[in-house]
Image (cartoon, rainbow, N blue to C red; front, side, top):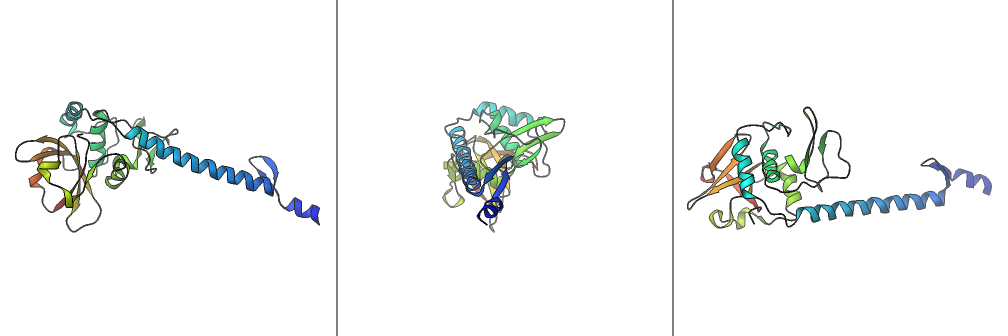
Length: 218
């Protein structure tokens, strides 16, 4: 009976015949490796994302060239291209992408520890959800960038050229739109954006929304 019981607890794992005790140890090791990889992903995210300085001139040059066009090096997400466009501006301004060691061949990477867009072929792209989705972008960048919430925001004091502005309806809910600050004068700030393409929209013309600021200007 003991011999039969031992046979019952013998199995094939990764092509190797092992006993149950060995299998348990192997699974525990795999779990440890998986947790280690997750921790490394978070560490890589923080190390690559922090202490980056935006080159304002390069960012503005990109916005000036692409505010009413679509760059073929990136996927088009119309009619929801706003976050995609802002991410492109930041990359053009020298903000480094955070990429996984293995990039899926196409589609959306939902791992929020990464921020990137990669062209894989003609009209084939892989993008992280943090690159194209307003809330996921916030999840990624709020780890390393200063965020000013609507209840603490003074527009003329707190917003500078180079910052990212995210919009939420005053009635509440998720943030649904993103724009990039391209100009500031003594009276107001101006924003560029896609979806409804804007070169330099006066923020005072946006009614009925709260503003959340993700600081890239300093």
